[in-house]
Length: 253
View 1 (spheres, one colour):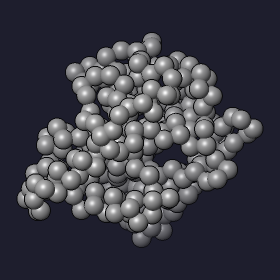
View 2 (view 1 turned 45 degrees about the horizontal axis):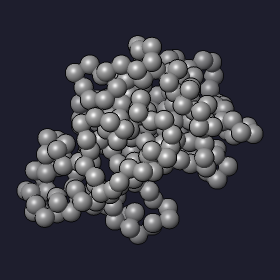
View 3 (view 1 turned 180 degrees about the horizontal axis):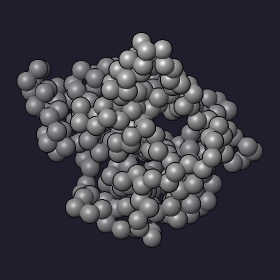
View 4 (view 1 turned 90 degrees about the horizontal axis):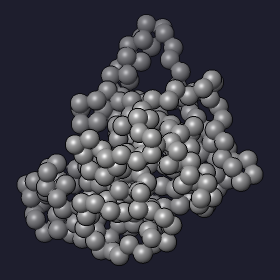
């Protein structure tokens, strides 16, 4: 789950999907639309390094990207989050593509909404797009659709991943040191055929440098695998294992 890649990274990601169509599936994010690429520099980079024709090709591709993936009928994956307009999953299947991202509505919310500990159910995002939703919304959605987990991205989180709603939702952010403005780690989540999942942590550059310095002093740090959190299937339910003590319920917004 990446965020506003450069044109080189975008080309590599899409080329990989073309080369390995049965192994790589890309979901659309909130930055994959014409207006946002103009604001955050992707348009300018394409124009400077290549030409506008390449940017237009990317936009045509972005407008066709799928919005949601469901893994083994249990893990709901999208970039942003849930929507008050989402009554059944068939609504997502009926979204016509190619399409731009509207300012409001189901498609907008799936790309822009965020979980929050500070709302009772739904609330507008202050000075933002779409809505914030509560843990109660997550629980009701999962129970209604017989799902176990929501996996989303959209926001920088300090450790690369962050749980919400009693670990029924996880935010994953894969870019360490985002925009060179945050001292965040990145994380990748792997799901095997048995729905056993694990996180691989990508430390921030400052943490890596600190670790190397301490190593020179003879101090040991745990490896990234020590920070791995496992998800195990237990019958029809997913449970989180490998965590010592309760997980702090930090707000992910």
